Image (cartoon, rainbow, N blue to C red):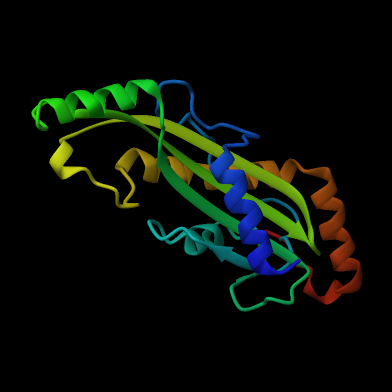
Length: 198
């Protein structure tokens, strides 16, 4: 499967809101996530791709020293990691009513809407998605009708949520038995690349 096909699948997963794991604790704030500390063999090098621009996510992932290398140019690598995010407003009755009320008052009454921020990590080996990790949080926004912000800029709590999703993702990868077996198999064919944490 080509990279564009992978992106399309990932975009569909995010837009449909298919959830495997949620980091939110129900209070619209990220749940407390334990800081990840890598142990044992470092994971093999991977082809890395992301659409996340609000945070230098590649640098953040590399700082954990979990993967030997995250390379955006290694298109032919058998192991791929995609990190994707998307923010979208919920299209619900409350948001519609709020918008209609604001319109009828010429924008005097603010528009109240719900926003869902989703982060998705995919670990792909060959053409098969071996592991998917989906996190989302919901927040409320109150904006003036005339100054609605449709940019993809993240709010501070969303940035924190995104950072915490990295810890959660790496923790889940470390506990994923099938991935561990596949990483070991990779090193059977490339034993010289095996490195361990101190």
